[in-house]
Picture (cartoon, helix red, strand yellow):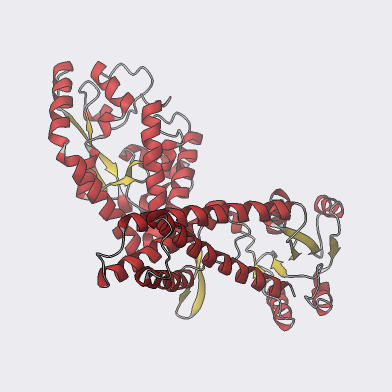
Amino acid sequence: MLKQHRTLFSALFIAFDFLILNLAFLLAYQIRFLGRSIIVDQIYFQLLLVSNLTWLIGISAFSLYGERRTERLFAEIYPVLKTIFVVFVLIFSFITLYKAHYYSRLFLGYFLILITVLLILSRVTTWAVFRWLRKRGRNTRNLLIVGAGRAGEKLLDLIEDNPGYGYRMAYYLDDRPGEGLLARLKKLKDLKVGKVKELEGILANNPMSKMGDIEEVLIALPLSNGKVINSLISTCDYYGIKPKVIPDFFWSLPQKISLDSFADVPVISLREFPLDYAHNRLLKRCFDILVSSLILLFYPIIYAIIGTAIKLSSRGPVYFKQERTGLNNRNFDFYKFRSMQQHSPEIANTLQATKDDPRITAVGRFLRKTNLDEIPQIINVFKGNMSLVGPRPHMLKHTDQYQKLVPKYMVRHLIKPGMTGWAQVNGYRGETKRVELMKRRVEYDLYYIENWSFWFDIKILFLTLWVVLKGQEMAY
């Protein structure tokens, strides 16, 4: 019955999206042509039919209606944006092949704006309403958790801390739960606590026909209990319940993992990132080349102005060049406009800039405050040893130092370093006096690597511009 309800909801969402698509088309047509009948205008009526067909193709390609209880709002909106993009690529392909001169560009612009705004409003409203209902005990799913170890407690924390997910604890099974956890479980309303062997009896009386029945079984036993886990999985299979196994070491895993195979043996791939895929790397590289090429057109003027100011303020070269750690731990020459007095390579390659650093020149202080000293890195971006966005590259000495002190520090070198990054726009830039500051910076870098998208890069670039205009405490 509950699965039927979910199917009904999906069907309603699909129908509502098609309604929005057609409404956006008709509104755009009315705004552009002020009352002309679309039925009479057969060419636009054909385009309406094509739009519906391409939308069907788009929703098939991007799993637009999968359940996303635990996802953030952006995860609900992002597939919609991808589908709209595909739909309009297909529509423009159709227009190019068939009477391209006939269709109004203004109409197409109205259509794109209306369908984007209406669909996003629909998703935001739906997401907010369902979160509101679930917090009040509606539209919930009933869980049975097996295992009162650390993984089981972590699941319990997650469910209690996020009522908007709409999960309700129905059973908690473990042979030896700790006293503290047992006391905590007894406080939960309608939760039944039992032994692991009771699973079969519970599922045997679980017809999945009314509220209160078990919909998901989460097995959170230590992996050392392999025989017990296999037996529980077989029991779930027998009664037609899909089990999910939560590894007892899951809190130490990255946010994004995938199931892979090695000679037909299933394995967990722990380090699979969006930029592992060639099409994502190509998209990022093309964007880097496009932006860096545009900036390089004006670079001679920038170099002449800033270079002259540097030369007049102190002795030494215009550029500061230093080896930094890059992609796959390969070193590269990193460029900046020189902002300090010229000094020995030993000092330059070991000491970070500090607040009120006496080495910084008057011109250099302005350059560092406004981030103008970073502009020559656009050359690094164009050459391909840096990207516009990514983890900031560190001095070789710091790479050797923090590799030993900060867990997962070297993972940040699995993608190209960037001129700006997620850590920098969140305030983690400049001097790192304490190891804790570097740990926080690495956490932000790893989040970026695991959650990369083209739009995430765009967001970081806009945030960087805002930070530069606003000013940042650590910019010295």
